[in-house]
Length: 245
Image (cartoon, rainbow, N blue to C red; front, side, top):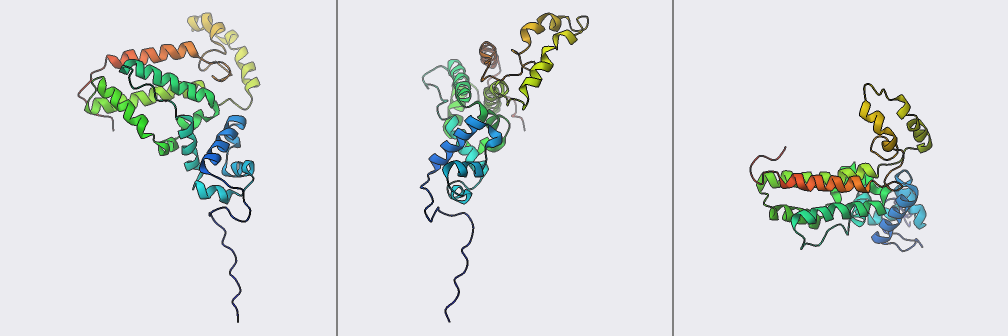
């Protein structure tokens, strides 16, 4: 007697049965477009599959998990951040920070993917790591001092921009209304400088704003930040000390 065919197994596999042709590049581009247009909250394997007109299992053939897809997205966002290798190390770092910020400005909703999750390490760009290390070596940093300086560069590069392009709250209008009355609540005797400057700072300074850098960029503050970092790094000892553990 002929055996009854076993039921088809569900799982991750190559798209079949009339599913649309896909590629990893198409999936990553669609995921990034969804993040750009609708924010991180709308991003999932299912939402990408819907946008591509396929089942989620088809996506998993090309990227095994959401985390891996995020890593691929980050790689695309940051693919053009490396400056001209011919620049001296100070100007190279200034250009690196500026190019990184420009990349995030093009995709501000992706900023939290890089700044607040270690998933970004899965997309480790060895060319970027090598370039930073090489420029710090050019500057004279060696051994543990070089590793500490490298960590400082990456932290500084990501830090300001992540804060500048922080995710908007669900009710930005309410936040703006709350902050509008902030100057009137300041005790000028206890906080005289804040009382004097609050009118200029409200809406245009970290902690006291209701828009992120996509709407109200902090360009002048960023320039001060980069110059302060590069100048300060130039004054540090180049050798000796132990890397933080």
